[in-house]
Amino acid sequence: MEFARDQWYVGAFAHEVGREMLARTVLGEPIVLYRTGDGRPIGLADRCVHRRFPLSASRLDGDNVVCGYHGFTYDSGGTCVAVPGQQRIPRAAKVPGYPVVEQDSFVWVWIGEPELADPADIPRAPWLDDPAWTVVRGMAPLSARYDLLVDNLLDLSHETYLHGGYIGTPEVAATPTTTSVDEEAGVVRVSRRMSDVECPAFYARSTGIQGNIDRWQDIEYHAPCLYLLHSRIAPAGIVVEGDDSAASHAEIVYAITPSTATTTYDFWAVARDFARDDSSVSDFLADNQQAVVMQDVVALNLLETVIATEPEGYRELSIDIDTGGLAARRILKRLAAGPVRVPAAVQG
Image (tube, rainbow, N blue to C red; front, side, top):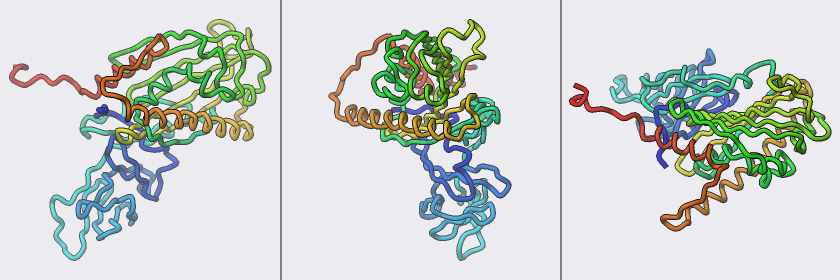
């Protein structure tokens, strides 16, 4: 597939980036991430200009990266400041740098023309860095293409079948959704309202609610990278229309980052406003969310093998529940095509 460039993608959680070199591949581009002594995150191309040795397998000297093969040394902007055996530094001795922003516990990397990078364009997930919320998080790599995970997350009816015993109940698949699309902003919203339904184990154990619940699932997908699920549950019948303060809230976040054409980073986090100081609830949610994510990983990795062997011209079937996913595909295709550029002669 073609990827959307000139976009922000999550390269790592903030806690992953430190004074050790971290290797990530985003949209097929090998990147090394690290922090300067004052804590600033840095992203450089993960390849020495001399003999291509990965800088992620090298070391830091202060804020400079010293190649572990021949000692070429680069400052945090990627400019070579020392070469072995000579005083003269070749003009071409520079490693490309990437605009990097730390926000909402993520380290975002701009893939595209650096001069187009605007941090104001990064979508927000403020709960992940807010002391009023308790967060568990993790990352799972997929051996499957990125758009399969986008499809998966925009159609939560699969919870009934793939995640039964964790987050899925029969009512999820049985309940219709409403979908809205902001094509210009690249945002897809899918909502599902369930009244007086079974409480899945994921929430029964973590909230202590017994009996049936009212349940809301409100999805926002901000193409190309960030997925937000605003999940709310409450004992059936106690929430007044327009006021959900009696509900328990979970903000479930996925940063979906393409690594290569058939591999993906699945960064996930669950922020909650209930049982905030209960470490046993944190442990339970971390274990269960990881189990749910790995069920998706197994399914999507299997789906990738099917796609690789399917006959040319095969066409899949789509139904009403695919409305959000199809809208996301359309937006991603437009973003991958890039802006329409009018030749100067025509403009004049």
